[in-house]
Image 1: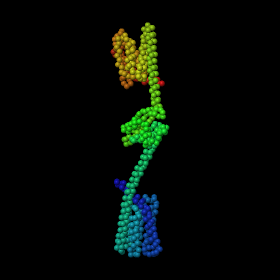
Image 2 (image 1 turned 180 degrees about the vertical axis):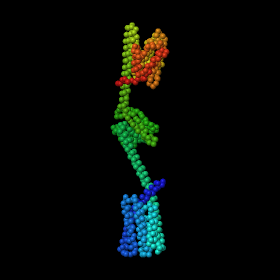
Image 3 (image 1 turned 90 degrees about the vertical axis):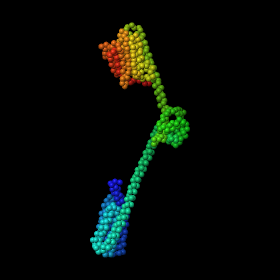
Image 4 (image 1 turned 120 degrees about the vertical axis):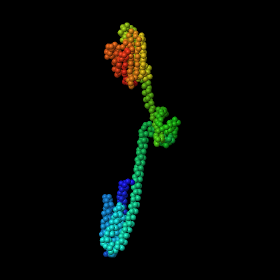
Length: 557
């Protein structure tokens, strides 16, 4: 215990000691005053004018002091100054002892009353006044000093020293007895005070623990009520079992199901196989699996219900306590309507895919009819320029028809395999110019693109390949045309079509509108939001850089 806390504890003890002693002090002073008054009245009536009565009457000087001592015990605002007040009152008693002693003479009859009165004052002071021990000792010594000074001043010490020392010895003896009594009382009260402090501290701790336990119980009850209310608000069927497969909880939806099927509602505490005798070994095994492994288990099952079959989703959720699975919650959800919606969506998706395939097939067939009509026109016309124009148009239409053929045959209608499409297109164009001695080389990285990307790229490739076959190798020269497709960066691709022919004329420009084919290429590159680069090294190479466009026009059924 630190010095400061020790001082605070002693100060608290002094206040406790003084305040707790007030009732006993009040009663003692009342009894003393009553006995003193009765004895005085007795002497007045039966021994009037006696020397003893004269000595006794002098003792009334301390009566007001005793009355004041009693009065202050009833005035609570003065209790914080009781120590100072009682020191002042007892110093006045010391003055009264000295004052009465000045008129006492050992040679006179009745002087022994003074000696007895002083001893009563000393012993009464130690018994009644519960002041700090140092103050009690000092004031007791002042009382003895007042007795000695009075006997010296009234010459009792010079006239009869034996009686003086004899009386002083008894006064000191009474002082010693009172000192021992006060010390014993204080020691007992100090122990009681410490015990009371410990009991008070333990009581506060106990009250705190009781309050915490009470709050914990109330919180647990609120949590349990909220837990049950939450489970009852869920429309799914829910029940909880312990490790002995006894039902712990069922929610309101489960109870309503029991009522509708004429089953028992009060099932808490019963074995699950007793409540649901139709439960299979598979279900028991699933519950045991969750208890053993502590992981949630999700299954689907078809169950009979009221002359119909439902599709149920079953979740078995472990409930832990102290890192151990103590219970398993089973949640059964009727997903029959959701399953019907999913099946309807799947059916609609299949119908939609069939319809889209039919649309692409019909578009391809219609374009094939257009190509056949152009071929008929080509046979009946001998104008070389018109024949060239018709052939260019036919190749452009074939590039578009080829896309619809790939979509019709593709497993995924949203994407076109660009490498396969470009290879097929290059093969068709090469076949168209079969009389040329030109070798076609393709290096195509496989990638899927949307129709919004594939259609412009097909037309661009058609124009560039057609021009290469037409103009890069005049006079039936031998040569090579390369078609490369690669992925440069994330979502960025490069299509390169080059030849080792005679190259472009010096006056060639993409911005020129004289060539319809190049004009179409420039517009299609802009449509792709891409860039086109031209290299004239060892022939001509066109590089188109583009990103895969996201399909925006989707057919919804």
